[in-house]
Image 1 (cartoon, rainbow, N blue to C red):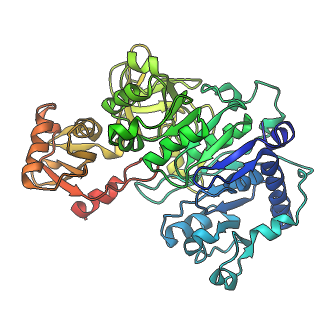
Image 2 (tube, rainbow, N blue to C red; image 1 turned 180 degrees about the vertical axis):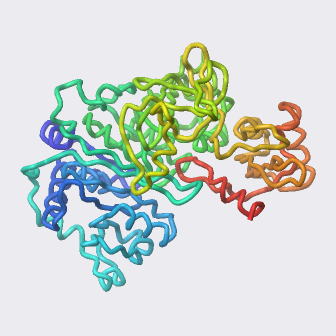
Image 3 (cartoon, rainbow, N blue to C red; image 1 turned 120 degrees about the vertical axis):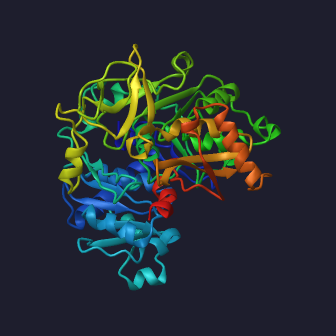
Length: 511
């Protein structure tokens, strides 16, 4: 269940493959590299409960760094290298990192970062001139000089992910460190093994098309390596590159977000049919709502191999649903296991099946938002249930259906409107590649519905097209849910996880 086991049992098998370059890190190399970095971190003075920060592109040594922290009892915080310097510096300082690890490839994003607790800055692939003058050291040289054997007092660390910050400053999700490491538990007793609903094992070849600084891509890759499998990492998502990787590396499992599905579906038919995808058995998706029409199209193409889950970085509850279940309950994100779902109204009263309210779980793990007791308390109900902030309902069989984020709700003339329903309709318009719906000020109604759309290649913005889009929605929805106006965008502001930064779209109207 960790690199030490597979480094001995499968030393020459790949733990990591970089799809574009073909670079391979074997299980033996992952074991040795993570041990060497663990020793360097101890030499630097870090002890159980301390933290490091990682600002890297999808790098061949990303998992080595994370495993070093996980084997040293440390917290490791992955940082999105697309953030501004100020945004990244805030996270480095807020997480209390003692060591910052980066690479020459993203040096311009990491070198200017300064935080008072940082004791050491390590750079992979050589140290750039400006990094050297700022006190950065050569990662590869320093790590190579350390022992490849495990620490004498190995203990399990944790990843402290930061919330995406779509509605404010991101906060770290802080979990208590495990008293007993996962790899020392009896077989079948760890939560990782109990929740292995996707069938991961040492024969798994898993495609990771998303940035590793996000929760699901990093956590699922670690999970594959715990089971002795191989993680194939794309430098960045491109539809044809992803399909080529499935064929070339005989991918068995993968994970996606709905915007990737949409871009895949819009490939020409001759391109889609040019790749052998027969090895592909399980395609997992999450992170953002998937329009049912998109999921139906993907299953028509790939077959009934789409598996969906709903969860969050906080990890206190989740749902999951397989393809056959979904076809019987289209639009659902599944049933909860082992947590229990409760739908609560604004007064924290439990609602019956079919009625929408704030989704809560009876939490299976404890967590806190680092340094923010108010935000932690705000995620909990008086009954002790926890929420990710999403609205939805369960049916009589316990299947959960998401409505939208509570913070995205539009109140127009006293009526609650959830944008997701309108977005699911708009995405079916032949001219639309991506769509976002949000509220803007209205003198009488309070808010009115606005749509922002990204067009398919070959379509140009025009008043006639905007009118057609509005008419298209009115043919399929109640008029109060339909946009009154349409903005055209070259690219909607989505995070690589697929989450939409609606605050960026709303701000010009509300400011």
